[in-house]
Each structure stands twice: as structure tokens, then as C-alpha cells.
Length: 235
Image 1: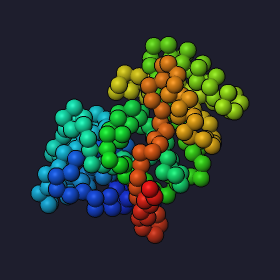
Image 2: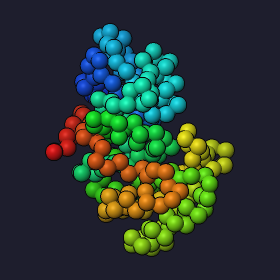
Image 3: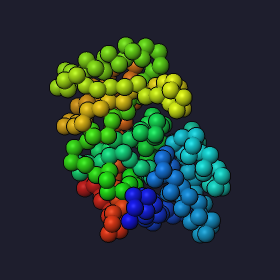
Image 4: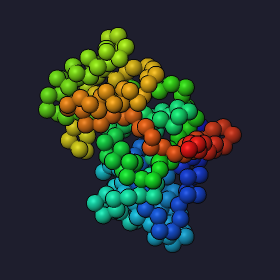
């Protein structure tokens, strides 16, 4: 199976949790798009009544084009679950997300859910988080000052000369999120203590959110050459 086949298989496997009346968050990215398209087909085929809260304008536009019933967190502040992709996950169900730039909205929706289902292919499973650059959403105001604070914190936590870059858009200008913020990507290779790093970064003025999704994910549905493997976090 190709990587795309595995992603699509995981997305379609996740449909089994969808039933009439559920309220769910819709993730952002190519794997989440597979789920959104398959969800729309199931809703139409089984005549389900569900509410969906998208995590980005991209997902909103797709869901709207497919005729799904769109809501927002103001209308539906508590969701049954969210289905979204991930950039990495470890055995403790800690995720890195935000490669697509929607991390703040993704975390707002995810944290408003009873649990999150991460859908992905097997390449996303890692022993230690960090090989994928960690996105950190920051205020545009004083972005260089915030970057300096982040670098100082990383040095204090043991990273020597950590590699950091301000994310650029396709036009070469600084990438701006839908929330109006910038993103600094941290190339850390290994994050031995994600909770410590998350707490330290979130304590810095100027940091809006990190791409570390901790204590949020309850289920991972992972596409492999042998089919979809479902992993459930023990309580």
C-alpha cells in the first residue's frame, strides 16, 4: 500500500465511531480531508444528522462544499470527539501537530472534545517526539523578542544551539495563521520530556500555543501494509 492508501484507509476506518446525533471536530490536512469526504458520503447514505466544527478555513470550505452541517464552538462548546491527522505520535499518545499551520484552532477544537482520534499512516509513529519540527504559534508583535526567549528556554532545558526558523509562506513572506499569528518551527530532533517543554514554552509572553498535543488523544487509527491498526490509550 502507498502512504496515501494507508492514510485513506485510516480515515475511512474512523467512520465506525460516527453515529446519528454526534457533534465532532473536523481536522485539517490531507488525511483529515479523506475523513471529511468519507464522512459526507456516510451522512448522505445513512441520512444522519450530525454537527461538525472545522479546525480551519480550508476544512470549513471542504465541509461546506460537501453539504455537512457546519457549527462553531460558540454554538457547540462541547464535542463528542475530534478526528484529525498528526505529524508524529508516541506510545504515550502525545502528538506533534501544526505542520499545516492550524495548530491553535486545532487545539481549541481538540480540547473541547471528549477525546481525539488521530488518523495517520505508520510512518507517524515514533519512539521519541521531535524529528518533525515542533511548530510554536507566536504573536506577530515582538516576534524576534519571543524567538530569543524561546531560544533561551531551549538552552536552559539542554538543547545546545537549537535550530529555529520563522515559517515562510509560498510568497516568501512570513506565514500568518488564520488567527493572525506567526509560527516558529523548532528543529529539536528529540523531545525527551514533552510536558516540561510544553509548560516552559506556554509560560513565555508572546507564545500563543505549541504543537504539542498532550493528554488530548485517546485513540490512534494507523494505516499499515496489513490494514488499519487501532491503538487505544489505557486509562
